[in-house]
Image (cartoon, rainbow, N blue to C red; front, side):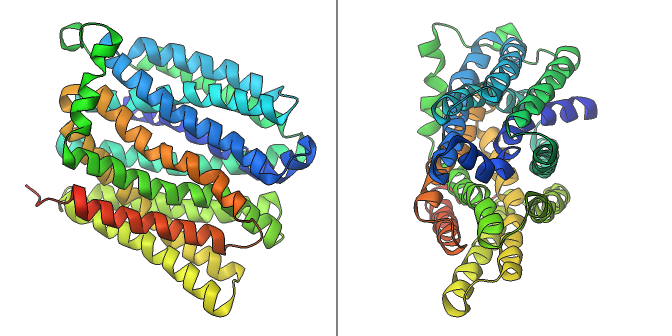
Length: 390
């Protein structure tokens, strides 16, 4: 099972890799394509929107036709569209290629979660999700280091060639090691429209909807950080792409460390207790950043520390909401995975260009958006998601 979880984690990391690897190239891409920063951030939005749509389509589809076939086809298409992004000559074509790349990258995310839910329950599922979170936490670090390294020796286009190579490796591993975990007698019947009925039923469950919206609000804060921090540290503080990758690596270590702690604590404490603690950590970091900027003015060290604190809470938020949500959706794990994944990315798709619109000169706009996002997560959790643990 450990090898399968590792491969599923790698497949889940393809979409985050495609989001993060080219972020150090944002300023260079804006100069190369002669477009403003918001136009490059729009390519991230296109990818995020496609990741949402891809999960909503493929999740119910995998409940109907099984997990393995869409996984292999989607991963193969990810390779092709990554190469298409590499040769895009304009911002418009880049946005289109990124949309298609994101749609196909979503397949690995939604199917991986569904496969785990097919085979695991309870604390074992929580532990498996902690591994996924840890790998996904490592993926942005590796992605941005690789992206910065590629920029030192090649133009930004080469980053998408590297993504295509990662997709090819994932495809070969999936073909060899990922079994069909959803037998025919458990699959949904009828047309594809009928197979979306479990999604409607899940949304009607207040507690499941609370998990989706809590995860979505917290993820909006995460994507505000992803989209805005590259301009804050490189343009505002004057860091090189390599220096920014180091900052991002240290902050991502917070996610890795926190996911390891979460994996251990989830066997001793109810997830309903761990989730609000995670939201509180992220909210505290964002609030401290806003207050310090307003009262004292920003400094790089304080910005770095505050962002580190916000990342500490993410593993607990993602791990708790994913596990609790998928447990409620065991009868239709593909549909549940799709809705949770969509919740994770849909607000992020809207947030990415907003950060650029309000300015990239300093950390305050980014921090305010993060603060609002985590505050909304608190409100949604207490309004819809909170119940007494069993």
